[in-house]
Image (tube, rainbow, N blue to C red; front, top):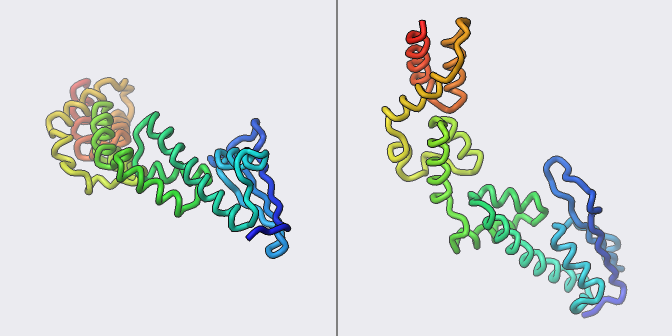
Length: 223
């Protein structure tokens, strides 16, 4: 049923608008009806641009508030899917990272959950694959276990749930050799060298016991 009192408009953010607290600028949908009065909704910019096309005569304009909300939902789903494909086309994401990114763009929580589940079910995102690649790349970069575990947790993945952790990724002798190689590059000043090396290695994610052992080897070897 059409609503002759329905009026709506979309305002896109200025091209020079900047992110606020890490949140990208949003489009604003303004709606007025006799039943509900004036309403405003914040939308992802991509959805706002699609609505502008409808407003300007591309496609069928909604004739009621319900039709407008349905249109917003469909456009949001379409834009959200395109956004997911664009993001994972540039690099791999964990499901948590992808959800955070979509929420920052302004997509509603229920739709974010739907989009992430769709991406997971069709293999666009895979936490097991992500974790394996992440761990191996960080081991090669000289990270220790605790730092890898901490950074994976920030991405929504607990290492205790990663198959093969830590045995398949770490060898005690290799880990000692990596820590020793990193520590041996540090310049010794003769002042608190042991403590400084321990802090450095712990900062890279090595266990305190291993960091202390290696620090002792390095400082004893240069005295």
